[in-house]
Every structure is written in structure tokens, then in C-alpha cells.
Length: 322
Image (tube, rainbow, N blue to C red; front, top):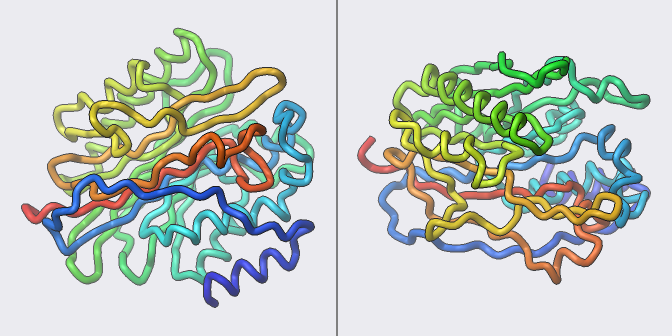
């Protein structure tokens, strides 16, 4: 099945047939090809369906029909297939079976870890717990290992437990290995939650170091933390992994990765990242955030965009020193 066949099939069951992406441009960061081995990574919090509906009243500018699963799933696939990534990392996945079946038609294989005590199961109409998922091009990569982490650090009095997922892949042609991890850290503002996110970040780094085995490594996720928070500094200061944020260009992160309206509040923050090991990987290009004009005054989610987070897409060279 071609990607067009898949989208046509999906939209044939949708109450809306509006296939319109928010246009974005690629930014060239490094044009020198220092490796024939490249990888495109996509990072995206796709917005849990049941949570999206629960907060539907708070997405005050989003039309109700834009939050329907029969429509959103098509728009999510549309965004995913547009970029033809090699590896894709998702958070707030509460329909893994759907994506696993749909993306299998495009030669992707997926792995999933559910959030311990996910808040999704508390709501009527839920599709089970949400969690983190990683999909990879099975024509290009072989899965060597999968590891899961349930953070021991959690909010006091909270039953919910954040998780991380890590896989080790091997390129079938070059035989180079690639470690990919993804996570979703504790939400909410305040110093206590900032401290908790930093603890989770430290735990994540130990987990990745244990399984990365000195190979090129990407750590992506919704960190729920702006660059000024301690966890961001913790991630880029680890002496063993030597990480950098792919979207940190000229010592400055992008202006936003989420831009939504909840109630009367407009929320515009940078909280999603793709970190990478600078010793093994070089960023060749990134896909920029769209302009305010293209996003529209109602922000996201919207008819034209199915999540309250924008996807991050980065192209890497695997350094020849391997």
C-alpha cells in the first residue's frame, strides 16, 4: 500500500476530508557530507485522544469536530507520512494498535511502553493507558534490543508514573548501530515539579548510558521543561554522552514547540527536544516551526493540525569516525 493509498483509505472513514498540512521549511545546518550513513528522526507528542477530549472545553478555539478520533488519526498519519522519517518517537500514544497496523503498510515496525497508572484510564471512552512509542523503518534497520524505564521519582501523592523507552537498531547496510530513547517527563509548573523533572532527567541519563554501549544516540521527548529549567542543563552537561539539542541553533532554541489556547490563556512554550551525541552524530538539517500566520489565530490543535505540540524532524549524519 502506498502512502497515498493509506491516507485515502483512512480519510474514507473520516467525518471530515480536509487534507491540509501547516507548511514548514527545512533549515540546512551542515551541508558537508561526512558520512554515507544518515538518519531522519521525528519527535512528536501526538496528544492522547481521551485527554484531548477531556480538555476539549479548554481548547476553546478548536472546533469540536477537529478533536474526533476518526479525523485526528488521519491528520496524524498525514503529518507522519509527509516526512518519511527513518525513526519516529511519540508520546501520549493511546492507540498504538492502530498506528502499528497502519504504519506496517509503510514498512515500519513499532515498540510501545505504557505509562504506569496512566490517567487516561480514569475517563469514559478511553482506549487504555497512554505511553511512549518508537517506530523504525524495518527495511533499513534491524531491532537488536528494547529496554523500558519506569521512573522511580514521581510527584508526591501521584499514582501516575512517567516512563522512557529505548531501542538499539542496526543499519542493515552499513552495520552501524543506533540507540534511540524517548520519554515524557512530569508536567505542571512550579519549583517542585522542576526539581522532579531534573531528577527524572538524571535517571534517564543513567538508563541511556547503561544501554547505549558507545554508539550514536538520540534522546527525544516531551520534557515539559523550557530551556531555562535545570533538566535541560542536566541533559546537555552529561560528560559521558556529550549531548546537544538538535534545535539549538546559534545557542538558541526555537521560539516554541507548543502553542495553544486553553480557556482564556494562550500558552506558547519550548518543551520538546531531540538531543543527540555530538561525538557520533552531526545535524545536517531540521524542519522549522511554522509561522504564526500559517498556524492561525486559533493556534493548535485545529482543523489543520491534530496535536497541541508540533513535530520535530532532524536529519543526522553518522560521523565517519565510527
